[in-house]
Length: 489
Image 1 (spheres, helix red, strand yellow):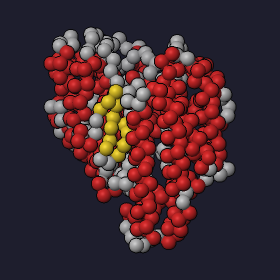
Image 2: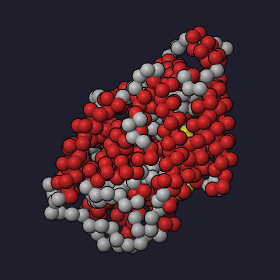
Image 3: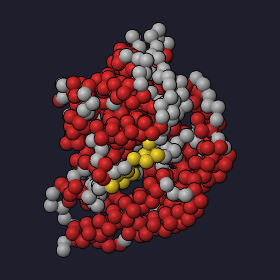
Image 4: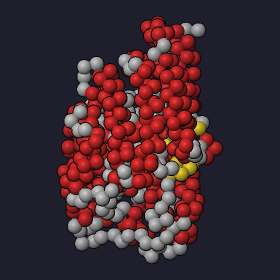
């Protein structure tokens, strides 16, 4: 065996163990007994210690020094392994295990605090997570920016400086569009009624299949916070239901299907290699947001969905055009995952700024609740009344995902670029969407984005697929055109 062959054989076992850790995380969020949290924390800590030991094994350095790449696949594998090896080697095993154990336990404490609207109950463990993440960032940064060191885990090559510039260009046009829509004379109606959760889940499964989710390699369960987990032959998603808001379930499902089909559609040859998963969270989010919004909330597709809901729940009291406007209605609200397209990124920018302050040490975790509420009031004009509407609504910080939030907006930017290219290539797309057949679009995404897994760098992948370097302009143009028409601007 060559050095490359030995390295890849070793890496395969590491990838398998990583999948097992991911499955434990899925179990914890869905069916694990609440009383098992402490034990699961111990299990995750030990498993992370084993993974850390493998990822820092001295033989990896020797194999990397001797390995030769014969093609772009081998070159990409070596790039990913070298990056992981160098980053992981900077983090002490003690710290990696402590983070895994603390964040595993923190998930249960977050869920309990969220249910009780008790930020004070969560604040101590949050402070410990922030302390550990700052220590990790310091080890990774090697004298550089602490936040950039964490961001690189989720969007390799991105920096806070470049994102601040991009987000700064987004904010004024988003706020102007939001204010114009909310102040318009034409206002879409709300959806009224009661929608049985079991029926919502039936329709959610139908939507998942329509968007290409393979149930032979996946399943849908319920969770407090919808998510996708796994890759290759076992990719699971979760959703949630609200009897008076079926869109929460339906569009959360479509969103997670976007993540899941990305993982399912990666070239099978990449399974248990560094290329066998999505290349970055920004690219991942581009798939889920494009599925959910540009496709799932389009006039053509909502026309089909209108008929499906009428059959399942009875006449919604809206014609297809009014239903389309209702699906896309701008509304006051506190919850990011339930936000409309126009205001969604404003939620993300709030989190991006606050978590940079936490990592920089300029915001005490104990003061997060008040800082969140003040910033939300400044951005949206009203103030959260309880913690579950504010800083406890998302699971991310409880599991240590600092640097993750900006990839949501970056994913929207990527989705805008991909959607513009997709529309150029598929002029008859709306006819297919009107029949409830989005696969012509999802197959376009599979061939240009998903099948490649981690073969290319994130921005390179989007540029290859869209035909131009990613910018915020296509997203803003799309939003202004769509919502300008809905609100008669």
